[in-house]
Amino acid sequence: MSARSAMAGALRAAIGVTELANEKVEERMADLTEAAIHRRTLEKLEERHAAARKHAEDKADERAVDDLTTAAYSRQRSGSLR
Image (tube, rainbow, N blue to C red; front, side, top):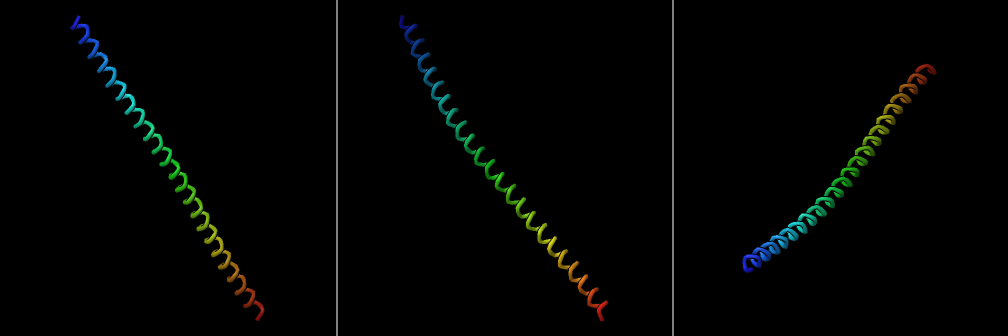
């Protein structure tokens, strides 16, 4: 009978350790999930920022080309008016 009690005690202890381990795993999974969500949010913000910066650079390039084209056209017109 005492062997049976000892075996039951060991089983209860093993079950308790398993439950603690499962709790730790769940906590770690929750932490990792939260970190992954945070990382993905930052990645999206970086992508949006890069797209906005590229758009601004493209617009600045377009304005520069427009200015050069307008200046060249104005020089041609000024030269032909003389």
